Image 1 (cartoon, rainbow, N blue to C red):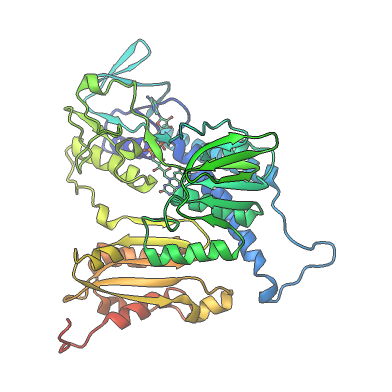
Image 2 (image 1 turned 60 degrees about the vertical axis):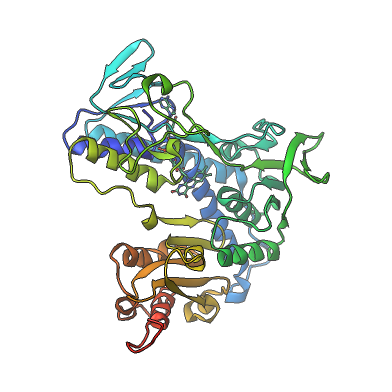
Amino acid sequence: MGGGPGGYEAALVAAQLGADVTVIEESGLGGSCVLTDCVPSKTLIATASLMTAMEGMKDLGIGFNASASHAQADAPRLYARIRDLAQAQSADVAARLAREGVRVINARARLARPGVVAVGDTEIRADTVLIATGARPRELPGAVPDGERLLTGRQLYDLPELPGELIVVGSGVTGAEFASGFQALGSQVTLVSSREHVLPNEDADAAMVVEEVFRRRGMTVLSKSRAVSARRTSDGVEVSLQDGRTVRGSHCLLTVGMVPSTEGIGLAESGVAVDERGFIMVDRVSRTFARGVYAAGDCTGVWMLASVAAMQGRIAMWHSLGEAVQPLRLGHVAATIFTEPEIATVGACQQDLDSGKVLGRAVKLPLATNARAKMDGFSDGFVKLFARRNSGIVLGGVIVAPRASELILGVSLAVEQQLTVDEIAHTFAVYPSLTGSITEAARQLMQPADDPAR
Ligand SMILES: Cc1cc2nc3c(=O)[nH]c(=O)nc-3n(C[C@H](O)[C@H](O)[C@H](O)COP(=O)(O)OP(=O)(O)OC[C@H]3O[C@@H](n4cnc5c(N)ncnc54)[C@H](O)[C@@H]3O)c2cc1C
């Protein structure tokens, strides 16, 4: 049930293992991930990153000719590209499922009882059912989106223009990414954050760098400011804060979390337990409380990432079809916040070390002194590596840099394979390169054998 990454990746694994597989999807294959959330937002950010890079052109010795004084985002073209790319990606998913012999039904599904899924009046029997129905943006009672001025992240790409003055409510991952992207594209952005700093659940050093960059680029960041309502005015929007202040702009984007799409699909009647927020309760091999019923992805609320949804779905299939399976290990998930610069993380975090949860040491190297960063013309960012105190085994890391999402894999491999800082330090990195800072951090974490701190 559901054709997003949780559902379609599971379908591919099940088909590979010889199962007879049906995917029931009510909107479009690829799910919200491909059609409205992850893929569209990252496509927008690809253009935004290029705009940011162009800002630094002068410093890199590139001039404009007289007829083109500066670059400008062409919003209708950009939005059309985003919509086309999402459709193309969805078509690729459909083609792949068809190639693997997966049957696809375009309809809304409901769990009639364990082992039986209903589509309208038709009942489909199955040995295994996977629920992967995803989640949707949470709405504030006093700020109901209208798709024109008061928007969720799913309504941005139908706008006729770039928001002139965009108020982003919420400074979590989604809010920070959109604030960063639209600021780079040319909107004047106000970020309304209920917390003291943006990205409150992330590495504090990383969040600080990003917030500093936001402010330097002209974004207004309102911290400790809780939005209670938003309404349309004659020419824009007005957001009211809990302390009585108001903020005015042309558009308001609401990014205040996600709620699971788990109502009205027969869960309680079938014995599938949900928590107090409606997320389906699962164990580490994606089993629900009902026999033969598994769940994967955002509807479980485990970690709202496409990669996690896909892995939960695959694990469910391996488990139900009797394959050897490793339970989900959240400690090894690599994640990225696609702000400018990006924040990529994997494994243990600073808080784990500070709280004593793990006995480790950390090294943080600013990229300002990295030769490649200098050549590329940026100085905001760092590489941070965590290693276990005695063994030197790499526990995790944080990279803040342009394209940090592409740089984190080396640290991910180290965490997954339990490599030591000595092993990383002996690995060749290219000179000059940003990854050179990873091997340098590992070198700094190496300790002589007789060091009492080992
Ligand atoms: C703005 C934004 C940006 C994001 N960026 C990233 C990113 O960069 N990287 C990343 O890893 N993650 C990202 N995410 C998270 C990612 O999109 C989700 O984790 C992912 O979509 C979860 O996949 P899923 O299969 O659980 O659900 P979805 O992708 O939501 O798919 C669920 C599908 O189920 C269908 N469905 C629902 N109910 C029924 C029913 N009863 N019958 C039939 N079909 C049904 C829906 O139509 C939907 O197509 C982002 C999220 C947002 C909001």
